[in-house]
Image 1 (cartoon, helix red, strand yellow):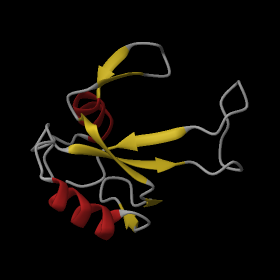
Image 2: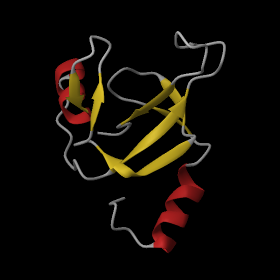
Image 3: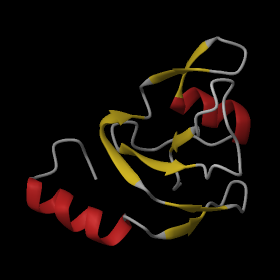
Length: 101
């Protein structure tokens, strides 16, 4: 699932993945795939809880000891439910990440 994937390939991937429930090997938790962030990748940055900018690849390496094999693959999006967590502004948070190894 590379960013350069054709529209037909993206449609096929979305049909298979959207709404799927997956279990990650690194933490044995289940997640519902709500979206695919085609324009983002493991080499993209986000701000951690401490405010430090880190790439998704660095985060998974540091947190779980995982080396992401294809840093250009798009990220899968799993939205937290309202009852799970809200940020200080009262909005439901979004979880993005690399859900396969």
